[in-house]
Length: 354
Ligand code: MRU
Image 1 (tube, rainbow, N blue to C red):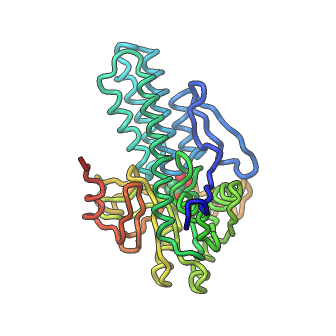
Image 2 (spheres, protein in one colour):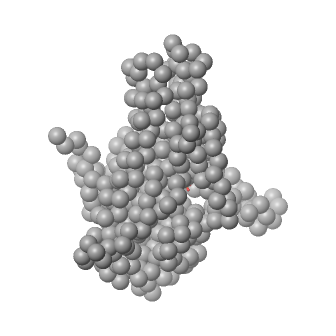
């Protein structure tokens, strides 16, 4: 493919941004029906917004928390300029506790904490610079992953994605949807299937909205249709993002990812995980050690505020699952592609190069 034939598909909206000293977020709870931007000027309001999923998706949560840390430092410095760092510690802990599974949250806050060390005077300018760097680096990483991932996809392929791992879930462009954007731009894709992603419907509400906004045709399917389409030979790749990748290569991602991975292996469909290195957590040895978030049963028993189950019905709502590394054919990162990722390959990838 020549350079001229490559079209670029770019999301022109932002999940999170720093605007006039506040954290602005596109309220993802209201999409696709309403595009509403909320602004937050306190650290605890940002923590609540993450918990309530105004913003969601691992890298976007990390970026929101980094901007939230700027607000934490501002609040602490205004209260006591001489001892602001001590006052900021519980505020940062509040951000860290907002959601448990996506490691990008802790990763971004660790980086902001490291930047706090040794700051003299008003910490806000230096911390804002760091938060903006986290944001910009994530977007650049997505673009690199997009190209690396698209290289692997043969012309005429049909792909399935689960949840939303797009511009809405990241600093921009997306991880799994970055690969899909890049592959579509190179005219490689025959069909993009989005699994609706019960119960929060990230696939139906967010992925479909985001792709159609970019004029990338998408076909929505129920989560349980994926296996049947694979059996019919109608899907060549499953492409997903990740919330946490452990040292041995196990992948936590939106509930339902594991079913796609098992079905893909059974039917000889390739399974790609696209994630920045900020999603890799070497401190967690394997998937059994990942904290899996459980959300309210009402997300299962109700739909848009209307009951779909009889009163008194119990429901269980784990919102992530763990795909064993053995089911991952390729891990695409901004530093390169790992085929059949394992602990050795992951440690080599993360080893600093001088
Ligand atoms: O509960 P969510 O919507 O925050 O879950 C998001 C996912 O599982 C995404 O697939 C993951 O964060 C990767 S986003 C690039």
